[in-house]
Length: 231
Length: 105
Image 1 (cartoon, each protein chain N blue to C red):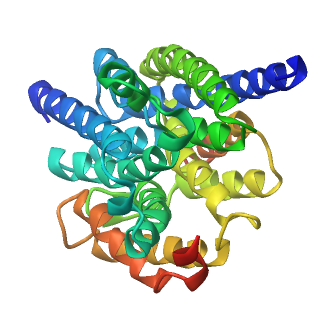
Image 2: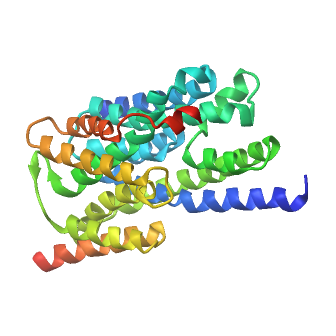
Image 3: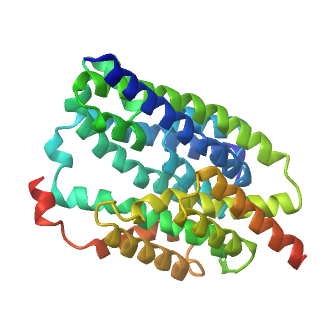
């Protein structure tokens, strides 16, 4: 109820939104490098609005992959937003079809983390809306900047962009491997497995298919832990 | 790939990802909260993102290659381990890639 709590939630949400929104510039640049035009990059940031899936789609296209493999890897990465939605329903209680349709668009890693961290339902809704709005705004603006900036690059600057794209994927992966992330050692094992599968298949399958096939590395995670089942 | 095919991929991917988000707010929680489903969803990002790191850094078409991107990736990993902000990680990776390009001509 107190003002400080409300303003703390707002400050955290907007701060995170502005910081995360910067990733949009890397996405815009990656989209340009993959051969998408400005409108296609903007459409993705406005409509898809889920970073890892966006990066995956342009990443597969950039590697010479087909549309099916590109869309498939985006959808596979999008499944975690389904799980987030399930966790958010009791917190946000989106009533009515319109509100549910609107809420769904902003269900992503960051808005979920902000909402779950809020002390009650009212502040969870505030965190969701403030975080979602600031990320959405920044993400779309920086996508345009990144796409236009990358389109202007030549020579060594293009080589720089080539090196930035894998680094951006590594930066998306990194938090899952850090100590403190649930089962970070198992995450690392799955990640190494995914990379090995992808590289081993690259000479033999059409581009992009090796990325989808890497999902098989999830088997390295083993069975669900009993504690997880109880939680 | 033609502009039409690119647009098809952009729109199909965007609509599909939105439907996945909406499904979470719409289906009974028990459908999604199966231990096996949760297990798979928890680990899919690690497998796919690592595969994308590998493909983006070490392949060109169907060939495995090592070039300036490896230097960029190594610098990025170091910067991430030192908890550098995202933008710093990317700038350093880009600088390393460009440097290798210039040096190796």
